[in-house]
Image 1 (cartoon, chains in turn yellow, red):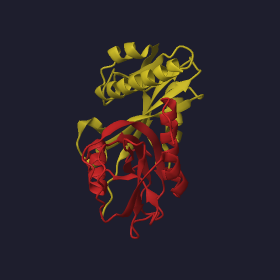
Image 2 (cartoon, chains in turn brown, orange; image 1 turned 90 degrees about the vertical axis):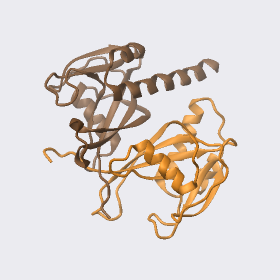
Image 3 (cartoon, one colour; image 1 turned 30 degrees about the horizontal axis):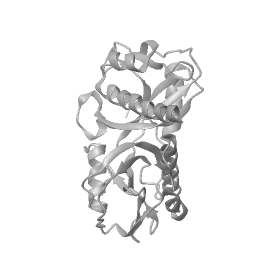
Image 4 (spheres, chains in turn green, cyan; image 1 turned 135 degrees about the vertical axis):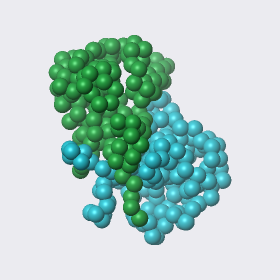
Length: 152
Length: 148
């Protein structure tokens, strides 16, 4: 029997270690999907690439950041590229929560701008439905962990 | 395909925890590779299937558990299949909780056990299963919860 196959994307909510702000980058206006939308960093895995490797590669390509601590995965999402519901456009994405000490960002031609913002502010700015969902998960998980640390 | 984009089998799995803090291990049957090992619940996402629907379906098929809470994602893993003609697999594991005690196995498994996480870690032989349990223990500790 033929195995179902998917493109797999990895994305990163990058949090700065000193001020807890997170990085948003803006898709260029010529993007096929979601032009001009604020999003997080990420992209599709290449064949033979493991998720953490692909994540680090995409982060470096899109932001120039190389010091990355991967905290944990946040969730999966399921989309069809270009909104076309065929097997070859079917994509499963994994979002990760990451941290860095780097503030300087060098964006690639895929993006037109970037900003570091407080997570709640990011949640208000972002209108990409998929990103908004896992940003909400990151905010909720962080609150739970902070509550634990405070209680100690 | 225009670029070197990969195509992967996608697996979705669960560390299923009961109210006593025990987690569910299932013994794989002799015909499904890797054979006879203690595994956690999970399986492949079907084409056009939402991954969370796939998780519920696999849990239902393998254990008959209909009701559970999804707590959080805990681990991502990848594995090359033994047969090189079969594509690589990428997977994600979620921590889930259930109050259901009754387990009915499918023919994919021959036995089940509810074990304290450290006991489960001790009997698990597969590196991915081991890592999933370790990540589960790590996440519980991060939330200040006791792990036996």
